Length: 265
Image (cartoon, rainbow, N blue to C red; front, side):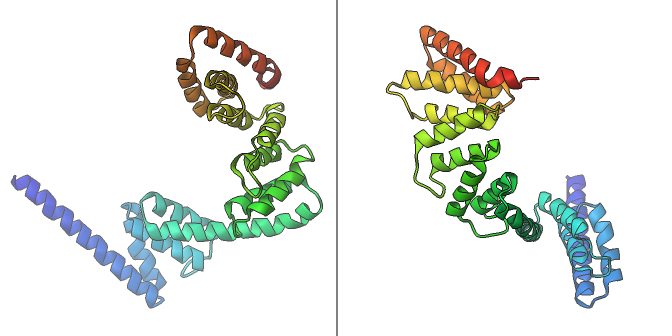
């Protein structure tokens, strides 16, 4: 009992010392006494203090008392974020958004020149709001330009756009058509999404017919390394009766010949 109480007291004292050191470092930063701030923070960082890690990130981001180093600041913010510091999370998001904006600005001349890879990457950035406001219609347009040039990743992204009505009207037939184009080139994610189309009820009259097709796609996506597909494949197989299992496995073998074997090492 006495040992437990002593341990608690020691822990509280340690926390108080850390809090005092953080306070001292913050005050030093405000006074632009950066050597003192750095000295206070170094020991706390070694002890795993997230607040200290975040403050050191600010020093490197702004070049306060150290050579400005955005990469070092980002590394410290990532460490602080892993330790649960919300300020590090926000600072990391801000830095990444700056990086994304620079990337997008650099991509646009290539986009205008018709570079399919640049068009697809810019489409992703517009879709998810990386370095810009989200713009589904712009993303769809860029995916379409790149997909029509044969870029497999863009064909998959165009399929997703039709699948989930991103920047266009939902159209499952078009989603399947573009997924199949990508799958024909060994694009595993497209096989997985084809499986989800059928497992979610698209395309056939009976649920068992849908499950058979869904199984065939999931089986082949799993064969190319998609772990989620492997899990869904097992659940689908349990839903099928013996005759349906054989049909599903035969269809999976047929798809494997067309979509998997040409791309397996």
